[in-house]
Image 1 (cartoon, rainbow over the protein chains, first blue to last red):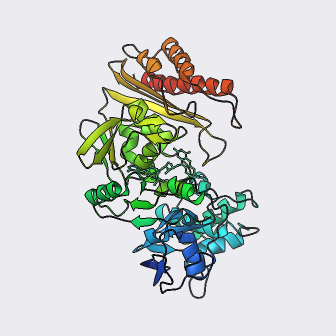
Image 2 (image 1 turned 135 degrees about the horizontal axis):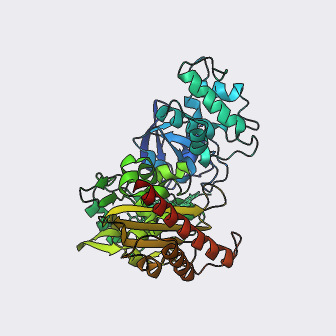
Image 3 (image 1 turned 120 degrees about the vertical axis):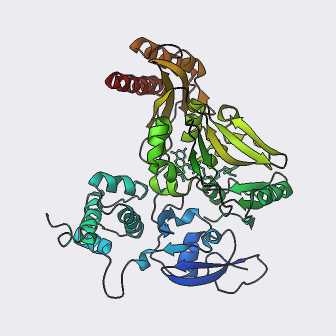
Length: 180
Length: 291
Ligand SMILES: Cc1cc2nc3c(=O)[nH]c(=O)nc-3n(C[C@H](O)[C@H](O)[C@H](O)COP(=O)(O)OP(=O)(O)OC[C@H]3O[C@@H](n4cnc5c(N)ncnc54)[C@H](O)[C@@H]3O)c2cc1C
């Protein structure tokens, strides 16, 4: 029997009906046999061992489990893993290149956009979708886009600055948020 | 939290989906955006043996504007698509005003307009907008399609008028009778929270007078409230401070809120009156400016 807490093996086990799904996760095709009730967040964490995706409230409120599904932020605790079959998922592990941080990660580092870091992966992925759609957002745009991601440490101020910093950097203006 | 076990099917056509729902005999559930259903499954408030996921059915994500001003919203049109539609802002300002106030931006990427109507939450935003616009849900079942006015769709909290093997395939907003104006105001404790109170008020204006009006109220009763008398009182004349104030009073009379952690019943009635006044006053001053 598949325990939801245990490793999710690529081969079906026991008597529980499973489905074979294939997901492109951070550009890599991965397959798994999963129970339909398995949540995407658990496939990512327990199945694919990508523990950068956090589960916080588990009630669709906090956004810590946010991943990108075909480029759009979704709360992975509120989607079935089977529903991601054939789709592209990006997790925080997919942000950095082989040797350098993604500008959004740099921004969070430079502007102190995190304290405990629990909400950070979700924040950064939501920020990525925003900057992909709107490369030059206003502070108001950033606040609006991040409204579904809760942070209990920072008071959001530095998170907003970090995203604006990353926007500047990605547009090739200054090195990040230096007054330009 | 893990949902209970269920059989999962993701049909490719509406007919197959209806077939599956018929087989399920009342125990099957449709899965659309999942932003209400999956939390309910996780909390074990629902444990349907069969989930029919409609997300794989092509051709259901439309948001179509007809030349006459009527609008069709497909079952897989997400809240976010409505929020981002420039055309919606021009064609139907009451809907556009609500689009960015439903849940939070991430939930809006998955949650659907039609799913929200079917979910029949007295605190849901879209049903009130549709009541104000005189909109309908188009349901398809084994015997074909029928159109159900949204004001008759909701029977009570989380109860809709669909039979077990009907699917809401799209929602329709009728053509306006003049220039469509209006707005949506929502009082919420924080973004992503359900409404403490919200009001949708829509007026079509022709030759300086109100040709059609609708007012829907959120979270002030066991279902979405239709302040039809308040709306009817506006029709036939121009929007004046007097007509606005009497419509606001009539709307507050329809509201049957309960005191809870979000506020007292009196406070909520007061908000209904204030929001109706505010929306209609804004409309009236935009008309004055345009004149
Ligand atoms: C944190 C959070 C905050 C929220 N805040 C708000 C808010 O402020 N205002 C608001 O209005 N909503 C809010 N919601 C709910 C959200 O808008 C949902 O998207 C919506 O209620 C349901 O749409 P869905 O597509 O997600 O439906 P699902 O969750 O997939 O389904 C909901 C119900 O409707 C039925 N159903 C769905 N589609 C159809 C169909 N086509 N035909 C027949 N039956 C169908 C399902 O069987 C199920 O019973 C919130 C949700 C969350 C998680």
